Length: 509
Image (cartoon, rainbow, N blue to C red; front, side, top):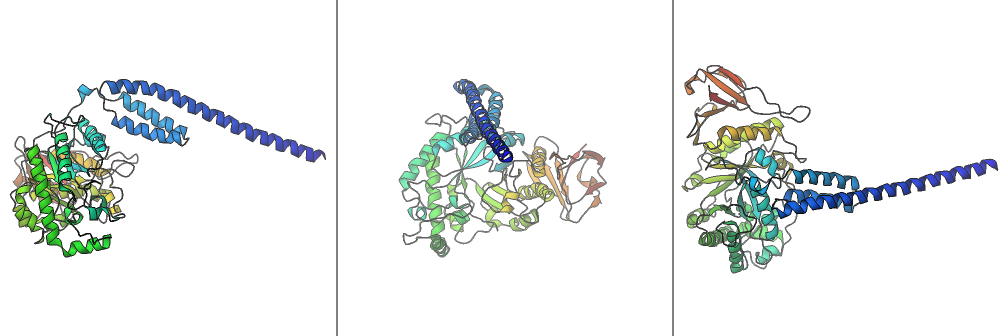
């Protein structure tokens, strides 16, 4: 009997302990919650003061939203962490008068980035001036917030227009479920209400042209480049008939009516160009990518380049692969280079197979050197951050990983841009080797070398005027703490230079 009583007493003590622990936990939890509320109220006062003084608070707002989500689900530890980050971010904000508008280092900046989202810190660290953004005409408030974020970071925006406003979007395409298609949000066609489209386009141009008339209040300086569509070689569907009710029918109809599809894109391009130029003649209109991955133009696509060549200022080509594939694909493309117009690449990335961090860093240099040597004026690496929703091969080409850690390619991109940006010309100076000479108007040339045939020693003295040269290496690996490993610069004789598959930069000493 005594044992039974003892057991009951012990059980009661345990239950009391559990209940007490739970109550104590709830008390501490309530204490944490109350402390957070007080802490947030103090933060709110500082926030309101800086808001009144015109500080840019978008980055802080993003952190606060994450903290509020954690608070609402009862994760007060995470909420406190985010609140501390918001406080730190608020304290580090530049005064409005300290903001530098535009990172441009020369009139013809040759480098840009595709897809950065809110990663303006890394973009500035790379000294990038040009970035690319999309506008689907569905959320002006969001567009204006992005403009504010980017321009407060000194970034120039190339704005690609996707005609998918819910009011005037092509009614047939709008009615079809296009879910599950990477890039499907950019599938578009001829607007069902052209006048409504033109009205919204005028509003957009007025908002971003910086002429002082109806400019967005967030605008710091003009947006100068607008692209008509994105990868229209597969995303433009023209004006399909109302009998089309699903995406399989839509695909089939497009394939069988390509002449009509491209005629409609030409007309859309013309309407867009004329509307933009009527509002601001200085704004540059970029053709959507009609070439596709093989950089070929079909007879149907030539409709745009012949009948509508007067309705764009710059052409755009996209390429994903490696430098050898790019060199073979882009060579002798008369249609591409016969337009006598500037050509940009708003998306270029690689490698797409057999991926390693080392090869990724190498391709950042190799692909863009090939691109520039072939006559492309500007290159937008794709991308800064991984393009979520796309296949892994596209995610690999980003300079940051999915946790926003910097890859070796990130540091190599910075070296490349610092070495050759604002060039006057890029020429391949050897038919047997990958020797490139990058010339400038205001400084000595930079040479970029690599070998396709393994490690070798070369005599480079015939190409250079000094007995010794400075060698700069790229970053191809990180240390155990994810910091870049920078090989030492070298001063060596120009007649005995070791090269292999990894590019090096050579400068006269």
